[in-house]
Figure 1 (cartoon, helix red, strand yellow):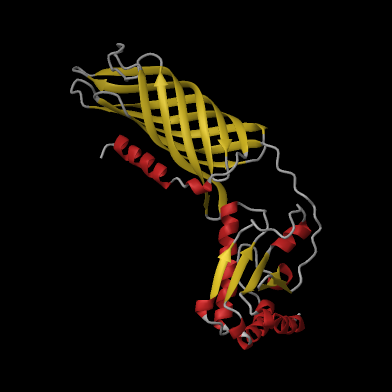
Figure 2: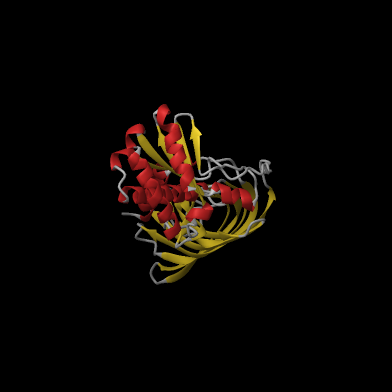
Length: 352
């Protein structure tokens, strides 16, 4: 398989992996200066030419809009390449120098690796134009004045208002007749965010702590807050205090199991993390509580676990107190016989 075929396959796989459900509002747009430098090699099918190796470098100005899970680099600048080879008989040292304008488009996914945010991976497409872009060994201008490249780019990014990125790209030429060019470049980018969309104003509502048990239509909501659950950061492990509370709750539910149809266990987080991470964590915590209820004797066909991330806050304020209220698990007792609501509530109030 030729290198260009591999990279075209990577581009196709990236596009197929794109998830429209991860669309989000634009977070920021950064302006960066990029410098790339590294290896350039050209193989040829012409018997009169030799393989050429050398180096390549570029200087680019990049505009980079970013979303929650994606970003896009749109760049343009100057590219320089120098290749050498031994060719002909007797052997002659050949030097091929190219100078051109380079334009680049690179959409990338944001990744978390080894628990560290900031990694990016995606395809890169370049256009080189201006003069001979065919790496002609004889130094004559051939018909090809525009070269297209495709490949992959991997970067690590850090910083907020000022952005740093470091990584590498590997690209292969797509349209040079009789030759294939392969470049492997280290990439360094530095820039800043001149304009950032204004965040939506957040209210400080000062909502109070919900009651341990409340009637909601034909359901009863049981609030298990941070003070009781105290999950370790990023963990779904239930502590002994929470297990004791659930062990007291299950006998109440079993004594009244003919008066309700199902149990919903809902996990919720605060908003101080990425949306997808909050969603996964809320699902894990809800499932952990549901598993404990099943272990204590509730029937599996009547218990479901759901996660909502940070989408259903009790308090929409941007304060520590609000975050504390919003980190919770709620147990919903659904479709209760209306004549039995008060007896169940009486037992639940005694638990508190």
